[in-house]
Length: 283
Ligand SMILES: C[S@@+](CC[C@H](N)C(=O)[O-])C[C@H]1O[C@@H](n2cnc3c(N)ncnc32)[C@H](O)[C@@H]1O
Image (cartoon, rainbow, N blue to C red):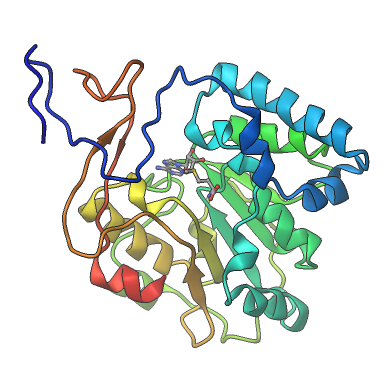
């Protein structure tokens, strides 16, 4: 910890190799380099590489002016992560072999990973995507040149901790109260009228949560894990996957992202780094 002489709040300095993000950081075209252009091209239909780059960077500029998040600056909204997990093939296999099986992408951001799942054949009408900020889903439509009609995945905007979104009274009580179909005998669910996840408790086979848990402290991470677990079909074969920033031992590290530097009385955003042992087992 560093104690600035001017008496401002003391925060942890970056560890070696960590990036210092500043809200007013300039956009940098070099971050386009890691973009999966084939994926974006397949979905948008833009075949010319220069036109594709112009399109992505134009959307990035518009979005960054409103939401100067590091993930927008780094072009992460067009860099697919989900298919890099070995277990991804199991998700696709479930989609092929088990009619009615449900998949949830929670904290989905613009939904680029959700789009990869659909592109790889998982039925769009069996997917639910959710995020606190609905505008991110709209950005997804913009960058991928789609509409709710052409990309009909059900999106629900909500705080994952909100009880009106997901009624939760503890994992054991929740599972005992449910009358869930056995794995493999799921009936198709009409997601079109869905406004919360509560009707899906015990009905979702696969949940993807990516770069999400590290936004919350240890207690909230435990609560989030239990909330999400209450959605799973309580049978072998259901799984939650994703990756998050963590540290090998229990602890808390606060990284402040500020307008001007590391020291600020009001942090813009704080990341917590704590991975409880059972979350490590799940992910
Ligand atoms: C770092 S982004 C990750 C986006 C995407 N999953 C990915 O891997 O690129 C974290 C996302 O979590 C969303 N989020 C933050 N707090 C949330 C909450 N309490 N409930 C639901 N979503 C939340 C943010 O809006 C943001 O889109």
